[in-house]
Length: 406
Image (cartoon, rainbow, N blue to C red; front, side, top):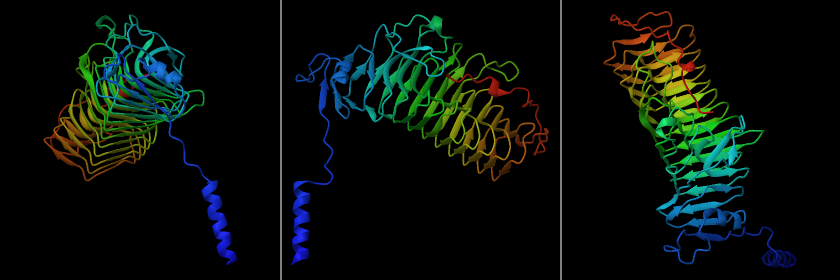
């Protein structure tokens, strides 16, 4: 009986004073530019709702065009209806690079916070009004901030045609600095009509998962050499199952005369990055990994111009189960030591797998070649095939030709 009374006392105590209270749900703040779609909306500007919100609140953005730049410094859940467009005009500098303090004008800034989720919004830079190379034009910028972007469309972050050589105009940029951290997942977004880069993650402290997005370059351009998706300068993360195409620097038409290249997927000065399941095509280098211990698998590349379907410059990377169609200089270029290149399929390239001078300890096995005169060319120029063609593969260090976004 005593044990039952003790049990009942504990149960009653738990009911009256629960040990762990359920978290309270945040408030929902509604924004409508003209209060037509959502007549009871409390705000007509997104920034007004952000300023009035508390951490953990939800902001519901109704259909409309919002002519403003928005800054977020607190955890928020932002959900936009179909047709909600953030389209600032006469944009001004509202941030600075954590790398070199260069001024930045961004439509949507998330800085110094965590747990910011944004979905469904269109971010359009067509009316940006920037008339010089500076400030640097960016669509969405996370700085020392973490969260998620889902089902976002980012478009038209570019300058006038007379300024197309400026290294400006990026769709989504994630950056860390001063010991800060940025952890951002970018999923099912579309990015197009940008000037320099589509999606970029830079600097130590940055970790991104860039997954199932469609990033489309502007095609042949004589301006800034574009990169579709970039992880660089100590950043970490994964580039998974994206479709990235149409990044071409028009003056680069031959190996001997090329002074810059565009890339669809670029990893540079970052190690341990995974690049898997992507489709990348129509670029000077469709997938370029300039780092160590990368996992490059199950990608499909096509329509390479001038250089390589997949280019690996670094050590101890795994290049497996990729399909390369229409390589130019080579299907897969390999410069480095102790890499594993296995079970890839290469269809139509001047050279299937090309090993650069000085590379050693690499394992190349189980690959298949179709319509490729030279399946494998060794670091000493030796050809593993009775047919030979004149290709000088070691005359250019392509790592010196890439133009990553800093």
